[in-house]
Image 1: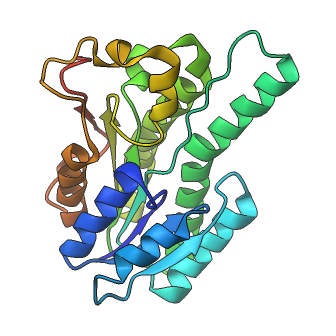
Image 2 (image 1 turned 90 degrees about the horizontal axis):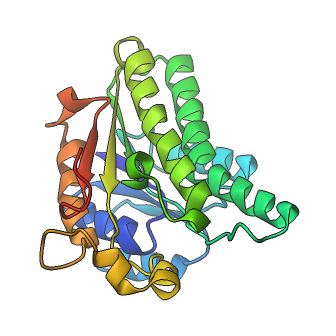
Length: 249
């Protein structure tokens, strides 16, 4: 299958990319800046996979990502919206700075997946592509339980991503042969999470986890592979929690 993975240069995205390459899929590996890690990854495989750099806060770059995905490989079978940012924005900040940080988080975490979806569906309809298209949106437990006060924008963006998934499933499933599923991890031990650890401490992060360690990218990737395979299509519109028992609903 042809799979687009956004934010694939590290963390959850990198683990997903590695596992999908092991399974023989052809990937479009998106990154913003860190291209070298993906070049090293692809050097270990005989694959048609490609790397595309794009700033997901720019709609021009998003359009380039969609167009180059199709031109370099083909129309994808699955799109994994994994790219995301989480920046601490204290309430004490001036409104201009807080507003700028809020908009950036919403743009990357929520608006970009919406625009990516819109562009692929537009192309699918225009070219009468009947094959099934799957969307996997990496959300967060923050969508349901909220988050620390300096991560308001992050929680809002991940809540919106859940709503996007449900809307895709309800409105485009039968008409356009689309499946959409969200995954809502808890705190995942990645480089991106390091700033949160430094800000709040590891004990806050571990609080409520019922297992013996923090969730890691290797705990999420197998579920992504299952969805990519098509064996979980009838879970369309749903959200699957992977949070070490730290938030149960």
